[in-house]
Length: 465
Image 1: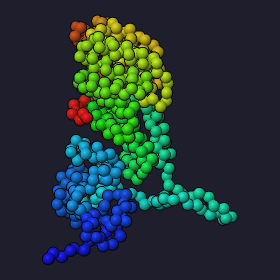
Image 2: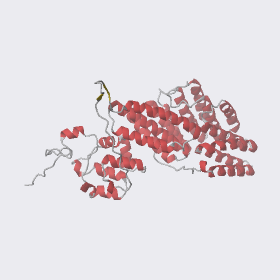
Image 3: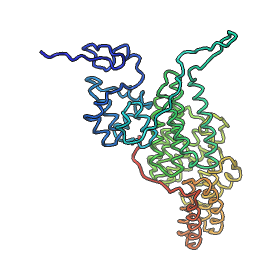
Image 4: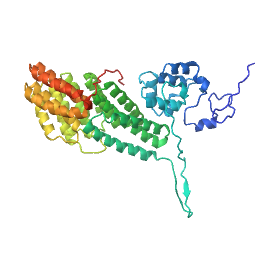
């Protein structure tokens, strides 16, 4: 006859029922809003110890979720994702090895969520400062005269969410003026902060924070894209896609599909770019400018395939939609103005071998360009230089390219740099070798400067949804 081992709740010490395979009694289980704490000895044995020795947080998360201390069944991915402040889709990607956890902030956050003993971690964890904990219910302080006033209360998650969105609007303006590099460490820290807020949130406040997290993830994807790190750009776009899909925001989902189309076109996958653009356009509730920016992507895909008729049709529809659009501060595609579409159309014409048509569009676009978007002005100037090079006008090409280089030195936009490399290629193809060498030398000299010394990162990736 086997003897029953006495098991107690790790939270309150009450004896657990034989049928309860959890580490908590039922009352404590209902109150539990964080991952169960495992004894030190459990971290030093079995799969958990092997995962820590391998320095792989994905293995640690999987081993923790399947640990025998939690009962016969592993902890659900839904619970684990909630404790870590991520979506179930993101957790699945992590456990399958598709999303690698490299950021020290993320490693530290997961270690604290799972209460991993600091001595067993392969990275340093700063001890958090001891601070008063905000009360869960409103309290008041009595003044000497007897009057009561509100004291410290719970932080308002909706107010924090709106503040973060307002801050994001300012980041977008900074990006248009200065490019991605000044913002990358700032936005990464904000994403970590948002994850912390989500981990302790519930209800409608949590839903709003998930939306904020999706907006920041999408923006981080764009920053990485313009930096030239297409692998990281796709990673963050997929993270935004998972969050938005959970939220059910169809317009936002279409915007992320458009962004993935943008990445696909930059790694020379026109068929995939067309697929994502069409998926974005399948949403009939898009604003005119959202539709315009997705049509622009469709046109790029067709231009890369040399399908001029389909490209022109998509561009005409994009022009019409951009003309119809209004300046709505809440529209994520608000930048997609008629001038923006003209600049994008020029890129298509150059790819189709029609530089004279590109000049016509660029003349209209650049004449009415707004000074607030300096980064994309550099892209437009580089495309104008490419059009001149394609027409066999090397002096004009290098003169305009020189103006684009000034903006490259300030923004370090990889898109502008790529366009300028194409100018040198076209100059070489048309036999203007001295002009090609002159521009290539100027570009390399600009990129060697300390303020513009960011290496190009155009790794290929297979993280497509």
